Image 1 (tube, rainbow, N blue to C red):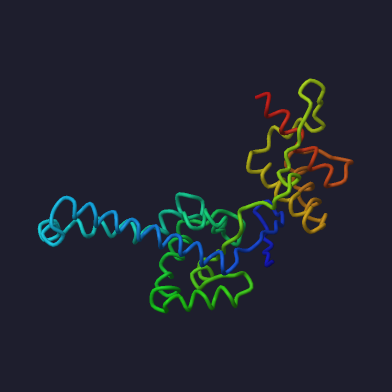
Image 2 (image 1 turned 90 degrees about the vertical axis):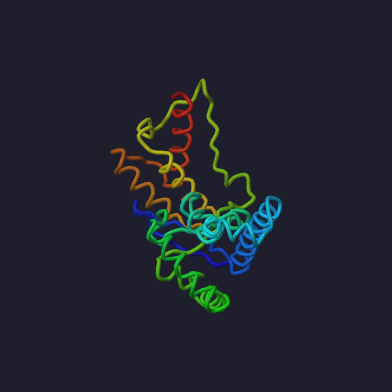
Length: 242
């Protein structure tokens, strides 16, 4: 399975599973089917209200109105739904920036514009060849925009939910300073631990530990992995009391 390592703005390296060519193709087919269903619905509405030809003769401006949703479908969906269209969501994949952050509007726009080259003008041949041949599974639009597609689904392992239960009445937080961390910080800690479980690369945990110690101005004598689990336990306990 192909993976990609991304260094986040917190200087922590996180590894993602890349979306496969097959997953991208099926996601695109699902999106295409959705657009076809939309087109049939519009046709039935028009036929149900008047004669098809006469309707557009007297309401030519409606053609533009009907065309806009499928035309901008991918761009709008990826912007509004965190890098996912409906097809991508079903397949459990999404667009991410190679810098580890959510793509900007400019990156989404570049991907969308280059669909003309990747799919329309080349009959999808350019997109297929690029995704199959590039190390980061990128079509031309991804290469120019600095993006790629990764899997969003965690492996089917209860440990990988990383839910760390705490005893409400007896639990004493080791690091009460963790209340100053954000939900996105805690999610990043979870992703680091998932990657450590998968790769056995404890350097990821050490990087995260050093960063958290700097941010919270604390010093720990625990090993990096135990430290991160303690951070999750403390955060779960303290957040439940807020």
